[in-house]
Image: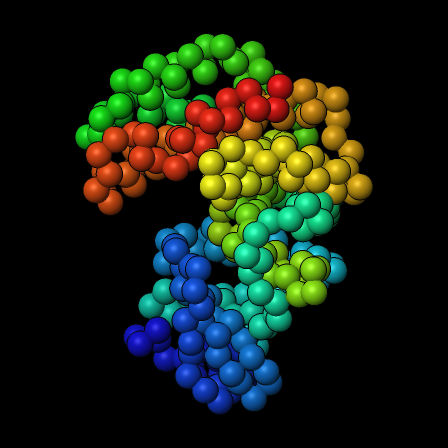
Length: 304
């Protein structure tokens, strides 16, 4: 944050720093800095990727959640009521929340994750904001088929994508008929803070998008698989997530039926984005070096 005038930014919120900002580990697309102020510790979040409209939509929703009892820190408002300050990069300020990132996902924690995901879905059931993006997941897979990354194994990847689209075409169409709303889309262990076994904060809504709610569950499953040493979905944890979810919001019969294809879709889309844009840039040479792709292959049909 060397280029950022921190005292001036904090003054917008009526805050005065009493220490230097310290970088928090874990951020990839954005920078998060803890700083002591006369009013307590705060977190400055520096947005490095998203456009300002998307950031405002994200912060509006997070503020609503935090102000309605959801365990996520609500962004502070400036004296003029703004949730973000446009400096060299957009910056938002949040109160510091105690807790640690859990070192592993356990069944009790997975159950809490499911319950919190359902709570978010219910709280935002009638949420409207045209600035929230909609991901064209099938379009992204077709874009992958039209691409030719400089990696070995691309032909096999293309074949498997085609097979998936052909075999699951009708089910994929039906996903769009399911209940939809804002999705966290990035709910994994590293985006949680936990104290004494209880989630104190759900963090990082940067991947906020709108889509079928069941996709959010599928994304949780995807991360459970990626986080496991053999990249296989731990079924006991997946069951705990669903059990927690249904304590708050019952899945419809159609959602239960389509959850397996949603899980496969989540893994395939994540892999496609990485294979197309990230893998060649970071020096990978084979499609099979993509963790998301490995996880997809090892979990095809795991929920059926």
